[in-house]
Length: 63
Image 1 (cartoon, rainbow, N blue to C red):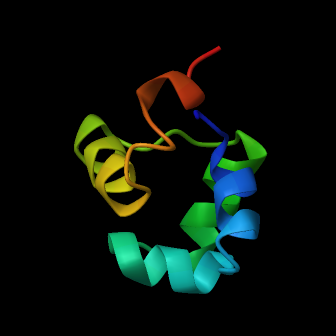
Image 2 (cartoon, rainbow, N blue to C red):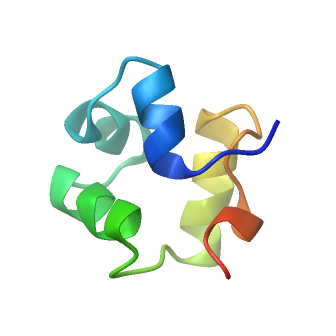
């Protein structure tokens, strides 16, 4: 199942701060990604895919 980052964070019972720590960025960066105001780098998307067991990936950040 593929999902958006905000859905994953909520379903996993994490907050932006906890997920940011998991992938190595600030909670502010997570907020920007969730709001669509910034896009993670390709390297960071790979980190997100690993941290979410593939539930959030590249296609979730492009429209």
